Structures are given as structure tokens and as C-alpha cells.
Image (cartoon, rainbow, N blue to C red; front, side):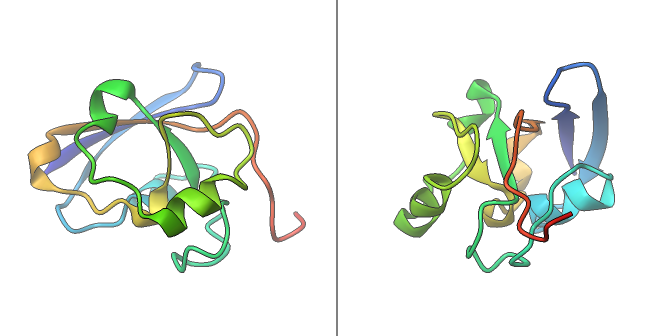
Length: 111
């Protein structure tokens, strides 16, 4: 099990959950009620599941693909540690993963 910590954009709300190896971070986040739209349902055709990974944890993750980096170019408030949560598969070697919600996002469903 991997301990995943979600931090709200303003830093005031923190949720901690366990995730199983093999789970997709987007699914873990949505099951925890995090504000990630995931419009394309993991097909990497949008950037509505954009998250910011804690710098200490970012280095643990495999590098983003070129296609993911292209989608991150469209993400609002993208940073050096931004990733698409639909592309992060929980790995038991992570131990913990700290994820911050971005300050703004692009809502593709018009809600």
C-alpha cells in the first residue's frame, strides 16, 4: 500500500488515503473526492486531471511521455512538477506520494 496525501490548492485541506499498487492516481483522487475532472477518462486528450507532485516525490515517478508533456502545455497553472494524474500508476516503491491540486483548471465539461 502507498500512502497518498492530497493537498488543496490553498493548502488548507489535506486528505490522506492508501492506494494499491497498480491503481491510477486519477482514480484514487476521484474516489477521495478530489476536484479532478478527468474529462477524457485517461486517454490523455485533455489536461483536466493535472496535479502538482511534491518535489521530493516527483523524482520517484517515471518521466512523462512527450504526449503527456504536450498536454501539460495546455494545463492551467502548470509547474515544473506538474503531471497528468491519469498517467501515474501507483507503484509500491513510492511509499508515499504527495499531490497538490492546482490553483486553477480548465473545465472541459462546461460546469
